[in-house]
Length: 114
Length: 116
Image (cartoon, rainbow over all chains, first blue to last red; front, side, top):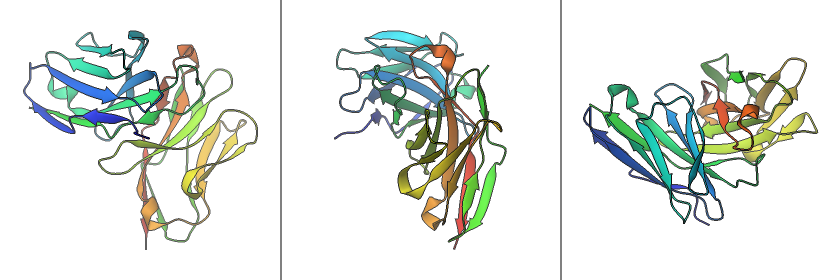
């Protein structure tokens, strides 16, 4: 049973550039959440996708956007990168019907903005 | 606003000794609490959760957590620590204001160092 996968593993970008991160949820899951984990901090919720729509959004600017595909995989896009966007980006999957269930996290994508 | 706090940045314990990683929460209504562990260069792994029922919750790898409503705490415990338990531990609460989205609010994390 494949768990949550993310690509790429590492990424280095320059300020002002745009980046796309990808996530495939655990088999059978239909909901994908994205979190940003800055160095030395706990993960912060960016947004969640269900049925190809953004269901909830955290306190992140519009430079952060996402998409969910019919196969439930998801992308996180960040435009006009800032140095402060350097972080580990985590994808988590779950079942929409399993509100009280745990979320399953992928290994993350380490984004470095120079 | 709902939140969790992990008052210790680091906990040091000798192998074989009991360990406790502390977590306190602030929520309106009944809390849904989780513990996750993160190893270097890895994502978060689920350890255990408290939804309702018995205040002592048993989880993976021999970990357990004690829910204390009066002290608004959810401390993670293990009777006998292993060197391999050394990792970063996160306490989290399900955001009750998010409807059914399951959004998690995480603490800052506690580094557990188990020495041989």
